[in-house]
Length: 183
Image 1 (tube, one colour):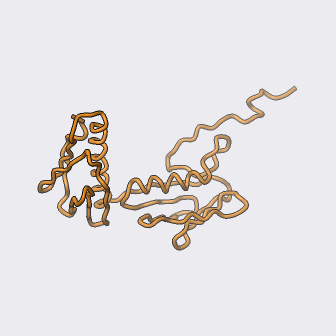
Image 2 (cartoon, one colour):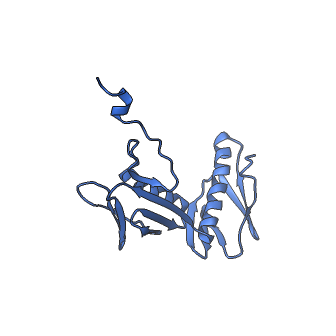
Image 3 (cartoon, rainbow, N blue to C red):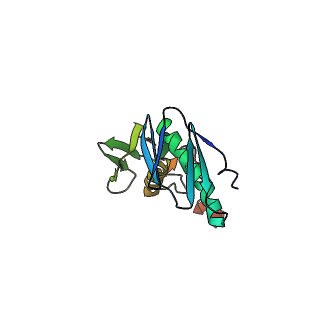
């Protein structure tokens, strides 16, 4: 059995779990989430705990076993605590501002970049060079933060660009230092 998949998932009292038509619905104080389950996976829901079971012992079933347990744990954590990712913007004149349901980024291009904020995600800009992305869906937060980062990923020479908070960018030596001078 999968070591991760066979662990019982503890469900807090404020969270409601329901399974209908091979879809799991989880509702908590921060919101609601749902996910379609694989037909190869079944759930055993008892008071205060969920046990994920697989139908067979094939390689695919074993991989789905641990995957769905982890996804359900992430859903429960999302509806109770929520998730947060932070981005930092580095560069002279680079800044961000939230305007209604869009994020306005000035990243040194000839035009500002407008990023539409998806439903279920909240973006704040406590400083013009810092973004805080919050929500209950871990997968959606990761997707949105990487899409914002991909607009201007950190470049290796000066380190300018959008990066995750605490991300280390290995800098390269420029052309003049690499050749050793000239004459």
